[in-house]
Image (cartoon, rainbow, N blue to C red; front, side, top):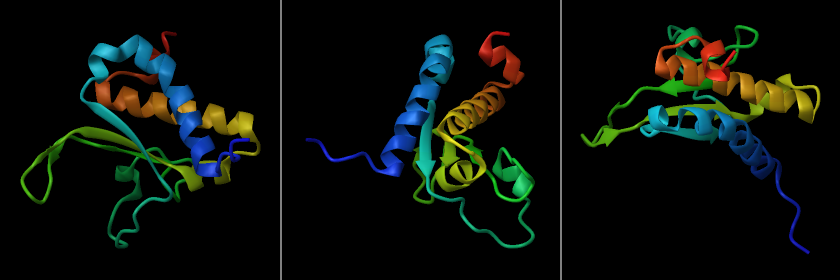
Length: 125
C-alpha cells in the first residue's frame, strides 16, 4: 500500500486542483507565471508593510504573495510567481472544504492581480 499523503502533499494537490480551471481558461496569459507553496511567509522588519505581501485574511498574516518577474541577486532573470502560504491558509479554514474554497479564492485574487483584472473576470462571472 502506498504511504499516506502528508499534509503538505495534500495541500499541494489542493492547490493544483484549484489552479486547474483557472489555468485552463487563462493558459495563454499565464505562461510566464509560476505557482509555489511555502510553509509560512518570510518574517520582515516592523517597517515592512504586510499589505504589500499579498492577500490578507485578518490583516495580520499574509496568505499569499505575488512576486513580480525581475532579476535575482546573481543577475539572472526570474519569472513572476504566486506563493501560497500553507500554514496560514490551513489555520483559517475550519475544514477541508473551507480550505479548498479559501485556496481557490486566494488563487483567483492573485491571478487577477497578475493579469490586472478584477477577480470576477477570472472566474468568468
